[in-house]
Amino acid sequence: MSENIPLSIQTLYDIMDAASVSGALSSQSVYGYKQRLKQLVRDWGNNDVEWTIANPLKALKHISAPESRKAYIVAVMSCMSHDAKGVLAHLKDKYRKKWLEEFVRVKELCKEKLYSQKPSDAQKRAMITWDDMLQARDKLTPGTIEHIIVGLYCEVPARNDWCHVFVSTTPRVDTKQYPNYVVLTPNKNATLCLNSFKTNNTKRRRTTKVDVSGDAPILDLAPPPPAFSATLSKELSNSIRRSLVSQPREYLLTQENDVKQPYKNKNGCEGRVLKILRAALDNPHVTVNSVRHAYACHIQRNPKLSERDKRQLAAKSMHSGNMSKLYCFVQED
Image (tube, rainbow, N blue to C red; front, side, top):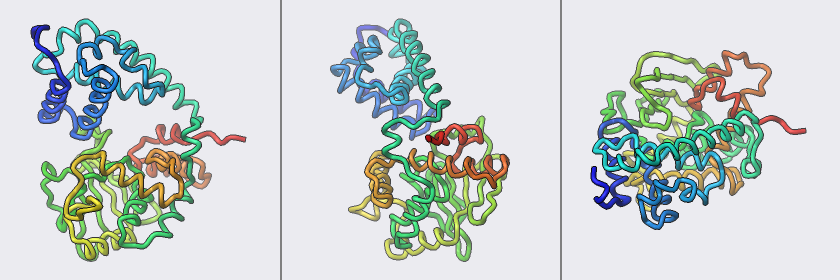
């Protein structure tokens, strides 16, 4: 590809979209990468794609936190890796090594932070306990969106994967059209099924099936689909049913000002979920990761649980047993 052809942020978007269409990247990954590329190029790169790619350290100078820095680097390197038409070939040849070197450096910092298991100042401000979560849920009115969202995190401490969860009355669902869905059939607990989420790779990952309706979750390592499923409790299932009766809709979580419409993108949905969690927990700093850390600490510090129990419970948050241990903060004196 000629170096004389001007590049724009749309050029990068087109590469990401093509990767999504081919199945090389999930739609959620593409959305996140686009947001970061936009900020790098438009806000910090003077709207100059070539300058941004040629100057990784300058482009990243506004981002100091290792995890955040790594996320932006991954967005750029993913764009280079999935450039099927070679429009970035001349830049990749010259500058990919610079991005890779910075990625390796930052990755080591992230690893040191994770293995230290010490919360940062921001994480301390956002810190909650698992009892906080359960108490917050129990104070909410069943049948409300607030009760459903907090209840979901109490039973499936996943990431923010609620943007387009389709509501189905039958287990037969077109997963290409509705990759994430909840099955509500009469006289049965609801089943949450997720196929589109950050860490899913069906080529390398087997299905995780978790029954959270009782005291002893069970794993079923059967081949996909779905990539992840969880049987919800009777209380949460009924809360969802009550909500759908009062506000009929096709999706579990919809826009505040139009209950018939799902969120157009993940960003709007994430904002709504954070608003609900922060209000319910009375903490303006809480994030979804706060919930996931609280859950990991809850199971890892429980002396009554065996290692097998902890691995099974960790699967509810789509973590391995080892990752769950790392998510458990060390207790300070």
